[in-house]
Length: 595
Image (tube, rainbow, N blue to C red; front, side, top):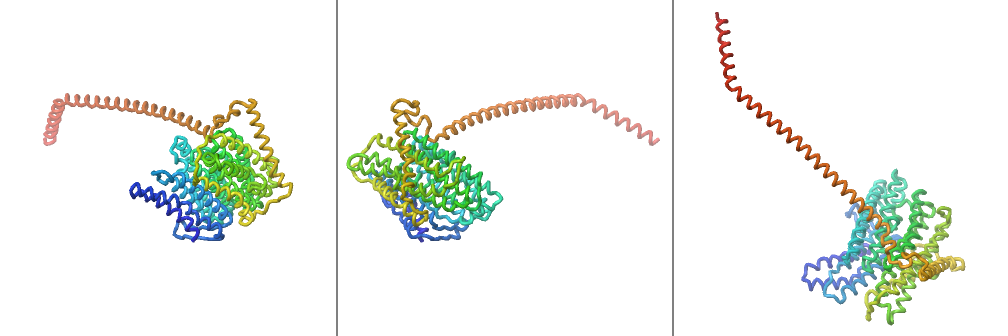
């Protein structure tokens, strides 16, 4: 019942918003405004499902190929985070977009609700067909969030997002069809079916590509730094906090983790994950939009999580603990990064006056959690992750010592983001608003929820409060602070190149690789145009030549017929004379025969 309610209640709200247009403009606005204000309540069944629905199952034999949904510890944990983030996003949208206006279609609320249904569906789906349907619903409805402002940047970001989504959906559909044909129609059977299939390598590559787009894996990450600044802050919070985790869930559900050791695939994924974790930090520091900086931070953090998945592919014995650690880290990251994205407009509207210190404490706390500072949920997630991958090496370096350096890059990124927020123009609001309340909700949840989920639902173990682990959580942050201050001092002294000293996003534009890809595509388009133009000219020349030959042949044929006709006309009397001679000869022969 709770599973069905988690889907049906948001869907009902979307239907009300859509059908309200059948009424008059005034009535439609009232209905949509009321529905938008009540929309956060539609996530309540999902919250109850997470809290009290452990082991819940729903079977719908008539839907698709026989739909099945199941709440396991992974689904339980991620569904709770999704419900909290979406409810906060809906609160921010409802009370700021529709509070004081006479117009409002409720489109952003509707798209958020549709995304929520798809997001939860990917977490609780227990069969391949239901998973794919939910994933596709999430992917394509998210385009409505990116395009919301209808600006030129939003249109470009949406085009790129849709292209990447089509690539993702095509790869996933092919991979899941092969998985189901190998006996993996049910999610529980999929890893073993993929491992035993004759096409294991092909299936794994398809799944890594398809889910890697959503997870922001390099080089499939290019949509993230473009979509985040284009979308409203509330949409960015769910894009980074919940939606990208759907890619992680796809890997955990369908890759043959724990079933077989895939060395080549595992090391390739690990290399891409480490590149994303460190390169994203370097590129993000060069940006000037705080939301773009946070987008690159998400790419870096997802690279950290992807390292855990790669470790599970390399060492099957680590698969279960690596999966639990990755889900725990996703829970922590979802809340912390959601608080930072929601905090961008909060800092602009409430970063002055009596709420200044409240905003400062909340943003600094969320940033410290993302960096993994001691006493935060980030420290807990990083500790469990490091303990899980100890002994797994890459190019001779143990991941136990490599992964903490991701926190160093995070510190530099977040220092850059903090400076941009601090120096940004303020537009104060002097009354409570949904964005402030929703942001406080996410900040409060980020303090306690990851610890509770990790200890009681995921059984990931506890955090060691001894001096050694505390120092391990501290030194990467100190190194990041020193590095960040060193960069700032060098820029202040004029020791850096101009493009680095005045970072404005022009040295490496948001989307990085997509700029080169667009340039290559443009060149390829121009080259194709030249080739097609040449082919057109060649075709025209061939057509003209054939026409000339046929015209010449036709003329010669016509001339020949005319000449023959003239000859026949000249033979008109000659023929009659010949006929007379023949008749006379026959008569002579006949007389001779009678005689």
